[in-house]
Length: 190
Length: 171
Image 1 (tube, rainbow over the protein chains, first blue to last red):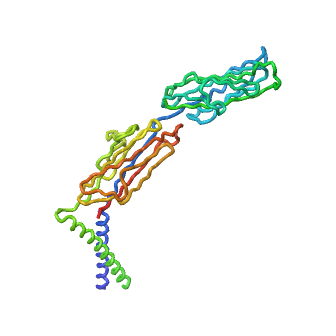
Image 2: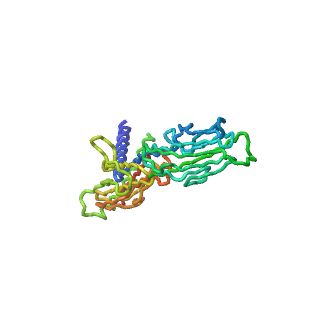
Image 3: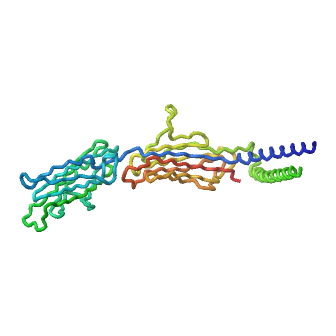
């Protein structure tokens, strides 16, 4: 029994020595830590006001005639739910002289002032008023009235006109003609 | 009974090995510095500050308990930066001092960059096996950047990074 107790004491003592020496080893080591947090504090939102789906004036080509029917739809990048970077304008025309004048509203709802850049019309970059013809329909795309938009509240408009041409030779004239055009907006921080 | 003999034998072997290892440290200290008094081991962060970049540094405010850029204690420091425009950045310079009497070296660097599509974090100026003599200071930098190629509002607007330096005695 005595021998048994002695061994227990010896084991306990050796364990204690190992523990102390381990702590001594660990003391010659230090860890330094740097923690960093970076946050983007601004909000960027420039786009067409997609709530404007009936901002157009349609005129019949003949007095008392049926006016063309028009559509305004939006897509592309979206910010703050209602502001989008692409507008698609379409209409169904019934006779020569039919005309639709669209008014697109562009707004800056972000926290940074913006400068509008060129627009793309059917994926082709344009920097000034531009006309193109699709079938018998002539589109005239104007540039934004103002290129500078204040943060949060800046707005401007741009006008697009679509017209069934009054030509004398309408060999390809059909009863109704539907055409559309797509406009993409670009903007950068002012 | 037999098991206890084995345990005792193993513990004796462990103590012997550790004693030899300690002896090696003790021997080198004796040879290199016979005139010193008590040996001291102390590696600490002494400062962190924004030294360049267009981003806004957010300072620590003890009154309002707002976390920000500061040395928290000898062993840790924080920085906090805010961006407005793509291309904004902040470079923080961290100073580390060997306040002890034993030479040290960097045995390991663990860096979690926390990068997102819009924010990139990097460090420079310190590497594994860099040495720091007793009484000397060294600096390194951590840079955080709002990537300049961002053209639309990022979905993730916060990035957290962490760098841990392990210093050991330079035998």
